Image (cartoon, rainbow, N blue to C red; front, top):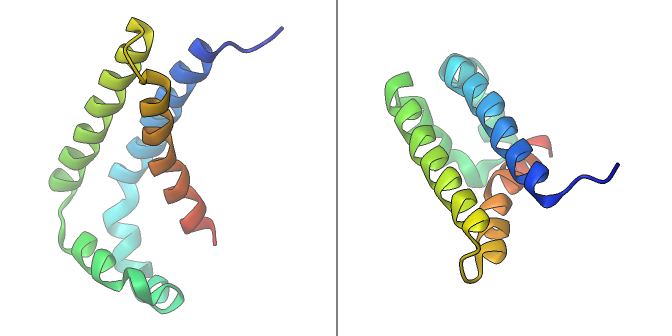
Length: 105
């Protein structure tokens, strides 16, 4: 059985919900306890990590909600068949994919 692009789009949204839901629940506490080690490992990200440390859970959840709304809107646009829809969705896919790759280094 082949997986269609529709299934992939919907699975990506599901993965986003699971991953970012976990980040909302754990990110602030984890970053406070592991932030210094992360800054030492990736000094170029120190400014961003310090900013994330200062965010509370509510502010972080709002940022995740904004990303989720954008992802769902673009996915609906793909299903609607808009111009350059697949290219736009691929660009949106690259942000969380690169985020996952950077954190795994």
